[in-house]
Amino acid sequence: MSKLSVDHLLGIKYLTPRDIELIIETADNFKEIINRPIKKVPTLRDITIANLFFENSTRTKLSFELAEKRLSADVVNFSAASSSVKKGESLVDTVNNILAMKVDMVVMRHPYPGSSIYLSKRVKSRIINAGDGAHEHPTQALLDSYSIREKLGDLAGKKVVIVGDIMHSRVALSNIFCLQKMGAIVKVCGPNTLIPKHIESLGVQVEPNFDKALQWCDVANMLRIQLERLDINYFPSLREYTMQYGLTLERLKRLNKEIVVMHPGPINRGVEISSEVADSQTSIILNQVENGVAIRMAILYLLAEKISRA
Ligand code: CP
Image (cartoon, protein in one colour):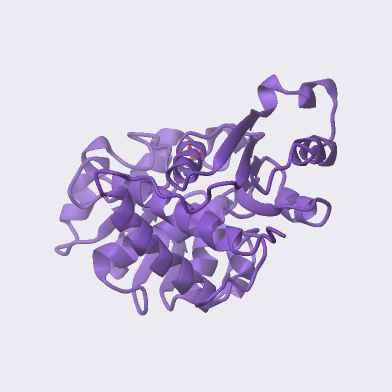
């Protein structure tokens, strides 16, 4: 029986290709279970999990909570907006107080890059990074790779272009690590101002021309323009961005081939992707959301195996 090489899920950077395969294979079993009429299994009975969200989330928060409940874990939810963080309590104090209530695992989303790594060095609990600033979003990358594999059969040799705001995107970085570890070829595409200067050092190519990138790829992963992070003007206007990098049906029709369209959500309809494309047969956006539950069940299960119950 295989085990993960890590004690926490802090980023895809720290996983081996075998870890990723193990998570994906385990998720296959859980996907079958959550499609049964009775979806709940007793696997994590007596394990207590705290979901700490210091930043807004719909998909990640709900799917972790659902995954935990499907596995029969005890779940506590924490939202920074209604907590003593507002009175100045530190992250470590907050988490240690929660752990004093005998919590085994912490799922955390936090606006600061590296916050999950910081926490893992200071508290005695399994930590799962649910997105830390512009650093990593490992469960999103795992569910994205799972969804590509489900649609195309394999990841090895597949050509994936990640489009848009690469600079501020934890999804982009985690996807680059995950796809490359699984043998896919990755390009990034977007305005120069939103592509990090040394991105090629990660082994990805930059293709500034969106239509050429679409012609090249098997999969286009469209990123959200993060309006809340655009502190300066990275492009002249949203209208101009959409003209150059927005995925429309007209653009897809010009390809004379089918590609798989993905988006981590939330979508800015009519900006990076048109409604017709988002809701079309080529889009696997809702499959990604569905697969998120199975992937998160797999991660919780594999990390729980490493908890000493002595
Ligand atoms: N994809 C993603 O992380 O969405 P949420 O911010 O809604 O969790």
